[in-house]
Image (cartoon, rainbow over all chains, first blue to last red; front, side):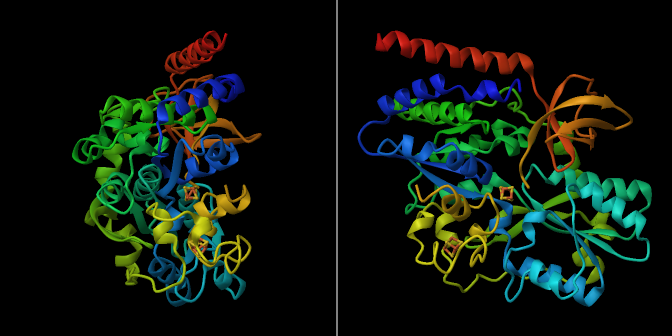
Length: 362
Length: 77
Ligand code: SF4
Ligand code: SF4
């Protein structure tokens, strides 16, 4: 298909890999792919071994499933169990562990959870079941935020009053700032998420590039996008500069999608929020604005999301910060496998541990 | 879940459009993008088109790829 196959040409890939190897220098350059979709594309494309010795790709915190704290899952279960809500969720949330259970386990004992593809489907579900409160489990980053905001606005306009959202929406640049300033991680370049950037615009990373002196390149998800993105990062390093560049110009612009940004500003307000394994990052969350309080499940149904740092043997936090690779976790492939995940990075198909497990411990 | 995918617009309607996704026709919301027309490409995420794909910019990136591949061939000669 045009615009997909074109970005997979093997001859160009080979040329880019040679270029990356020439530019890399002696020690492997430490780059972080922030987004879970990049992690999977890199694993699926077998890119890591092709670059070994030249570039070390660290997987970042860009998977909402992985960073959703267990307190959120507990609140979701309580909404279903104690408040009788009908839960609507993206499929990959079901197996994420809470403190003592998961939505999937609870579903087996009667909790009602419907998997939906779009937050709008949850509004439709609410309209069709007027006697039940339908709570959408709103997780994600700036890519999902406008869709969740759009669903809330649609419910408001249509007068669907039995719809609300349990929000755990997060913003990426703040998390990148935290990782950039961590001396243990030593990131030398960020491969920035493609679709988050489509919404927020590539300029959003300028503070990261300028404050921490770390090159940032927004890259698409096809193999050639990723390789060119990596090559652009290495060229910046070689030139001794740190700026924001855009490999994904066919979709992402410097200022982003203004309609989507307006919608986010209308429906949400920035807040501090807890990330599983990482802790609270100031200003990195989006809560539902007071004017939409009737659609805020926490307020409406009186079950708040409580964040507490997890006490667990899972080393997701270190994986998400790029401090260790999944294979360095003592549970990897033993007590923790995709069929029976111990930690969240093994749950979602785009989690780092799952990608390493599925495509080989590269 | 965070997977945005490119899709071609097959039909347009009031705030909605029909695209083909993974072999299935699906209605999506186009409230986040300025008017789309049939034949245009958009990136779809969670049931919403989040942006249009610029064919012109795509061609430019592809031209750059051809240049890189070509440059490397001549270097290896
Ligand atoms: S695993 Fe799911 S949540 Fe994580 S990046 Fe991916 S799609 Fe998004
Ligand atoms: S292998 Fe499992 S336990 Fe270890 S960090 Fe990954 S998800 Fe956590």
